[in-house]
Length: 286
Image (cartoon, rainbow, N blue to C red):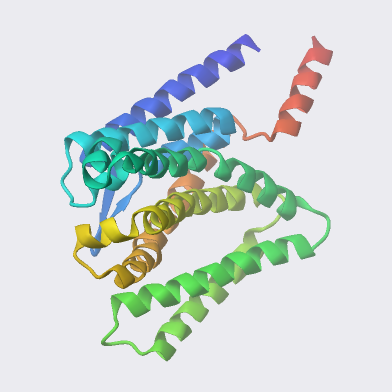
């Protein structure tokens, strides 16, 4: 038990250090030709999986705090106020303090919580004796990929590709993913698939909660900051979700699955029930 606590303390400190380094250096971004994909949330996701949702929430708070510092003291964009209560106070008054605190911290804390439960649910569904579980899970992921890829190509090539071509590309991607997932969704490979889902969900959690928060809380102020009409904000936000969000989610799924698979060789990911069962077994042996 003591060794377990020491291990978790060390791992928490390691993930915290990685988040801080990524946040204040270019290491937190991967250049991908058309955009820079943010990967600062990946240590938070991994921390949630290997340390549990409580420590994952703490790592998410650290992520949010680094965002607060960057946007307050290194405000390089006109929309930095949405992540900085200090700047938001000057922009929209007292209400801006609470609005920016929500956008800066709540989505990032959820990044440290949601992936853990998604991992547990997906793992159980894929390990289920009923075949319908894996089929439903994989079909849902394929549908999401189809919609996302279609929207991605429509936004990236609005002049050169028709909606039909973009639909066919998305359909091909969805079918390919469905085939790959059905092939890899054996009980033995369920952990790897679940890790990918956790990475995907974690990245989308950050994007969706941040962008929806901006729209609900800062629609007019954000429109003025980015130089668009108020009714055009939804288009800007949907563009970020379907473009940056997709790329970052795919990158997160790949990295979390790869790094997570390597870490499971050292420390398996246990659900709360499995942790209790393991602790009970250890105590019985003692």
